Amino acid sequence: MKLNERSLAFYATCDSPADNSGFLYKRGERHTAYHRRWFVLKGNMLFYFEERESREPVGVIVLEGCNVELCDSAEDFAFAIRFGGTKSRTYVLAAESQAAMESWVKSLSRASFDYMRLVVRELEKQLQEMRWGLAGGCGGSQESPGAWKTKPSGLEQSRLPALPAIVPKENGCAVWNNALGAEQPPDTSGCGGHDDEGTPRPPPLPPRRRVSHEEAASAGTAVAESPSTFCRLHEQYSREVARLRQDWQQRRRGPRP
Amino acid sequence: IPPFPAVLKKRLVKLVVNFLFYFRTDEAEPIGALLLEHCRITKEEENVFSISFIEEPERKYCFECATEEQCQEWVEALKRASYEFLRRSLIFYRNEIQKMTGKDPLEQYGISEEARFQLGTHRQ
Image 1 (tube, helix red, strand yellow):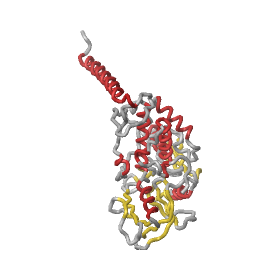
Image 2 (spheres, each protein chain N blue to C red; image 1 turned 90 degrees about the vertical axis):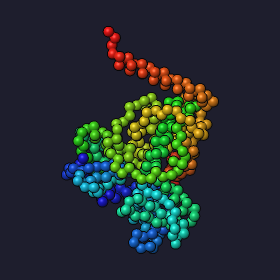
Image 3 (cartoon, one colour; image 1 turned 120 degrees about the vertical axis):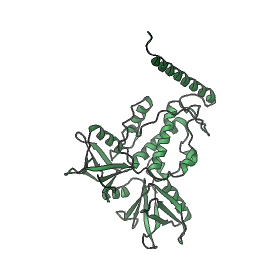
Image 4 (tube, each protein chain N blue to C red; image 1 turned 30 degrees about the vertical axis):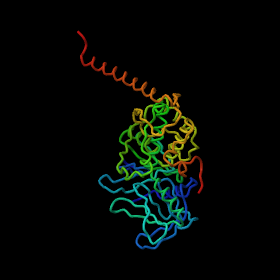
């Protein structure tokens, strides 16, 4: 399968900061001999070079839909990057110390695009809730921390290309978009820095109690008001629902003679 | 949806994370893929957009879509498709939330110290 290798090599060697780098031993595919290589992790790409000074990577491992785990090996500090699927290979690597191994396992486990997207969506949601005052004394949604620390397994392989159109700007969002453009460092790629932030937003979630909620509400409602704010919102919603129901029923009955 | 300069060929194109895969329409395995980092997505004439890469800016991969609407959707989707874009978004949101609450939203997930979430350049 063809790849734009020059672009890959550029990404591997350009100035952008690496998320991890160092020497690791990599077990060969056919033979069990380990080769010492210089590894550079950028985003969801794990590049490896013959030497630290090499100008081009020898290879790359795309870290989507994989599991990173410790493994039994004659080699000390060994760990594996395991992909699902019958045709997929397991990459066995070994670090030079316990600390290095732990650092690599941690950074590789969280390297996927999917994981990053998950975190971004969560923060986006939090920010949204804060601006709409929902998180305000009522607490926002709480995903269990466990869900965050484990890697999402598997990847939606056939994501359809047509993402829904840009969400119409609301008060909060318009500010973000401008700010996003203003605060970003100059973007050489021209890719994305000034655009509307991404994925379509789901409708606002009903307030759910946050387990360890201590955050000051941005909307100005004090934390101590927690039950009464919720009640107030509950009341607002119920009034709205009642009103909608009334409208609908009237429409059903039809015009009065 | 065809790509590539000079000759227009009909291809099935799939965006998966930060890769744009392309297939011959009747095949299950992709012919190739483009990594979408450090690239520029440009709207060209009607129904057409192009992708070019920073290390070779004159070379444009052109795509003609069936409709202008589809073209716009692709442009928007591709602009947001890079890992680096996601990273910048995350840093932005993190910063915003921290400004509003005085707390780092990543702390509760135990990932505040991760190199990839840090503001500014970080060198290993």
